[in-house]
Length: 85
Image 1 (cartoon, rainbow, N blue to C red):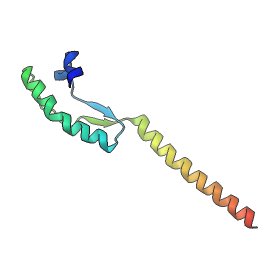
Image 2: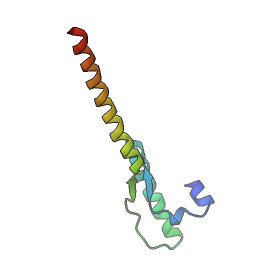
Image 3: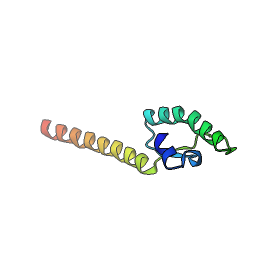
């Protein structure tokens, strides 16, 4: 919050894009009350809702990693079968 206040944007912050990890969810839940207080102190009359979005690039990377792992398992299994034959 100190950096957001230093740049004068704490009361303007309404959303966060994160990687979807549990620690980022916890961070946003922790900072929401502070953001609300900052908005009230600046007479900004909007509620801070959960505008936490998962980064599409991170989601696509996670999907790709799972696909690669599955492919490696299949290749490994085929190599085992060939070796036994």
